[in-house]
Image (cartoon, rainbow, N blue to C red; front, side):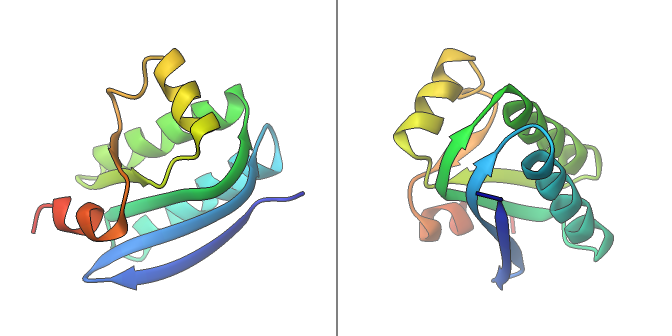
Length: 115
């Protein structure tokens, strides 16, 4: 199953609804391209909705960190939304849970962005 990205805007924040698997190859490239595309369009407040991600491998974790760094270096913010239990546990194990700003609901996540 390939990864799909649906992009939408809410209150000046770009939400990337991701579904499928974030794995070496297609999944990680898809995230990288989507984040770079959003930044190229001048938006640097990005919310990654991971509610429909059913699998993520080490390459996928690396791509999340890379996306976070890319957005931060461009003066923006990247937050994660709706982690599945598998992804939540993986971020806990890798100690990345403390690196990312993670929210459980969209309204809270949107409100958390600096205006």
